[in-house]
Length: 113
Length: 111
Image (cartoon, rainbow over the protein chains, first blue to last red):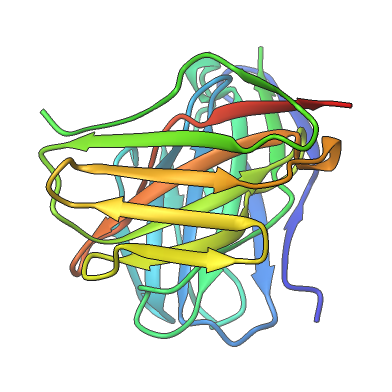
């Protein structure tokens, strides 16, 4: 099992550009999550999904969009990148009813200049 | 307002000693509390989960306590080793809710 994979590892964007952060898991988990982590801070939930075709907003969804067309994939789209979106982005998944431990990917470090 | 607080200052201890990390919360009623370890440049890794009706959970050198009256969880690493140096995150989850993370405590174990 590869677990949770994320691409790319690093990316530099100019203000106003768009990009998609990819996330995939091979554990057949229904629940998937996107977090951002700023220096010295905890993780903030951006969006989450409880299954294919179902997504919902987390604590900080503005400026982001998600889709979940398959169980395995949960891409995060940034439209019109802003410097405030400079952060490390983590994707995670969990099984059961979402009350179990979460498995995290290695993260994507994004800089917007 | 709702808040989760962990020791904001880094914890420095000597190898072999017990490290104790604190997680306090206000205005939450968590059904579960989880602890994660995060190494620099990596994603968090799950360590332990404790339920609201459990007072204590152990796994090898790790012990977690959960006091819903004090609204506090303590995370202990006994016989600490330099390899235990990392940032430790607590996260709580209300029934039917999402996981909410604290800001983490950096632990440094010196040989």
